[in-house]
Image (tube, rainbow, N blue to C red; front, side, top):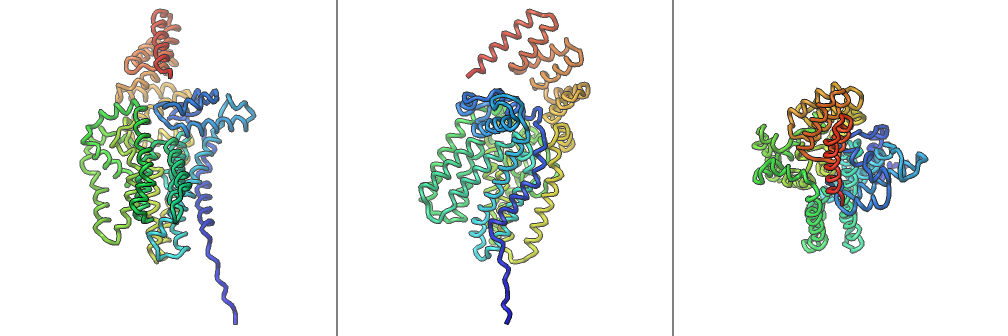
Length: 528
């Protein structure tokens, strides 16, 4: 009598490795991308004076206080380490020299792959709790599909392909690691809690958006892992305290946030948050028209009337899930999605809100919520076509990601595509004009920069950059006038320095002396 041979199931680690490899393969082309001349890559990395002349005192400066209105010391320290390795690899002194962008892009891609692995581990554990009747094979398939959704969604292109997006990717990765460690054991141990807490603090040091982690951990602890209230208070209470203190320390660093507070009154901010949440939900389901700048600032959303009705979408979805008994379990991934986005929904003003409340990078960690929902759907259904449909959805998202990725390979491509998606984006228009000027197409850049000033007559940076362009075009008197206007709007050392050089070459020693005096004062004010 023949003995029937059974095919051994694919082990969980193999599924996890598969999704990690998929993430690496899809985003690997980003290693060939250069630095952006601006769009934050300059101020954070390749023109950062602390990285140009690497020293321990420079690294200490990142930890001692905010830099460029951000307190992300771990991310800056990571960039410092990458700068040193880049130079060492190229045979330069590690303290000074040119930087190789491939190292920085490679770090984003590798950290994203690690995040994907952590999502897979977390989904396996969590999905099993929500689908106890499913066997290990179905759980593994469900977790792999959910992790692939997280890794390959087009919303992830911005944080992974953009060097400055390391703050989002690293913060998200460390946050996921903290959850994996915290929720990893059957019985609580002090060592596990300490490790998870250190990872939580590291996530905050990479990007303050990690303040949402205690809420997300609490949702999983209550609804998936059935923690007792005493354990929740004991293990997550300190996290809430640390998060609150971190918010107090970091929020004061963003002077532009004070301007953003004036865009909309306090009573209207929940409507802004509802509009932002509806926007993200739409992009998760239908990721069309993605852009580096959506221009969805609070005043724009109010003027277009979006604030008065878009919040009905998330509210209606929550109501449907709460009403239908079989669907109530999916309130958990919805709540995780909303909680992860909470720091940047607009309830509290932040710098970039002057440009747009919403941005793809803000959804990096939040995509764990939809990934959990997809994993739960596959695991809780015994029908093979459900898993097949989920696989087709993930494959389609991967194709969209492959198509979108090259747009981040060059600043001209990125800002041209952003303007195509959002013609009202003054920020993209400004950067597109600067990119054209950088390529010697200064006359074209001037035309666009004048459109920026027409839309944003309070933009000191636009007056500065237009002045520089006109100087190149030989219209020196007009250039100096624009530089003085830039200093009236907002005095900066860069504009003062530019004006001093212009006045010197125009033969105006008195005005040059005034500009140099202003420059010295601004530099003294900026000194720690």
